[in-house]
Image (cartoon, rainbow, N blue to C red; front, side, top):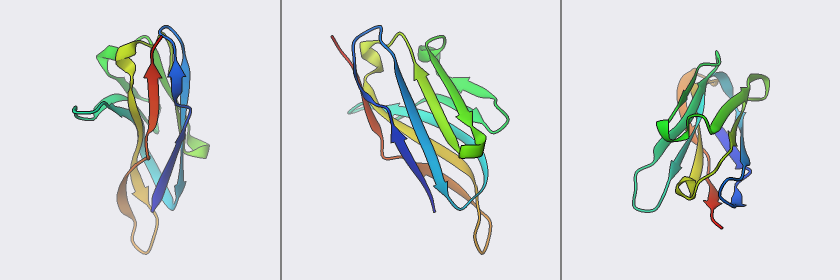
Length: 122
């Protein structure tokens, strides 16, 4: 099993900043991609940003230029620096990790964190 623990959510005023962290633990053979998704009630979960183990990044158009994803491969940890936050960024943010897990048989994993609330309001 691969577990993800997120931290860093909270309430911030428009224009403010927050930094999310997500640490993966467990029997990880190889981490391929880590990323962040977000969801608001009544809507589908949407991609925010991803980063591969080689450092390739992908961002949703709505966050380009404001959010930065980074990772520490040695710690299997991913970060999301969120600047110039807007009320429409309000959502539950979920960490995701995909890769290969060790065990009797090496197998794929696709794990999700429990989610952390980000609220942007004056």
